[in-house]
Image 1 (tube, helix red, strand yellow):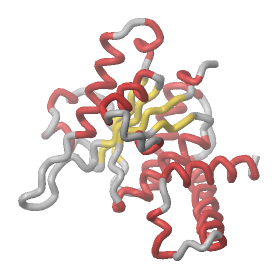
Image 2: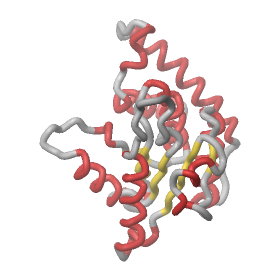
Image 3: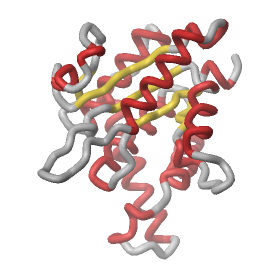
Image 4: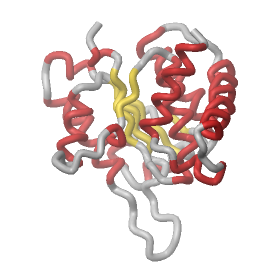
Length: 205
């Protein structure tokens, strides 16, 4: 099986408020045997952001797109269009490229059921999953999607959730041992946390 068949392009917010959702999403993806791919993997100034996005989408059979934060939440705040733009690129890759790309699979996530259709009516009829801004609900939605689309069977989402919490506790201890202050834990790069996840999974195989 090629890397393409295991790669999962993750398109979501990267702000502090979303961090626990992102970590639970990445953990679930790894738990189920897939490889999460994010634009945060690299910070090479010589590569434009859009070029990096296109490369990740082209190299991933799966795409998970969380549109829960695209609407402005307060007066004067702009709508966040990066997520729907990247979803559109992924859809375009699936629709207009032949071969392996025609078999791409896409999951759209939202905070509340049906809410996104008011902003993106073109998605009417799409099977959009909601997570209510709750990491455990997100774990359930992602796990069920992988089981339906690829795996046929899988563990309980609560098993994944409990393991994620065990990992989070181990991560806090490791960061403390390495001299990080608790207030700075959320400043640790996602790519570094993903590396810690790989170590955790290896030790708990």
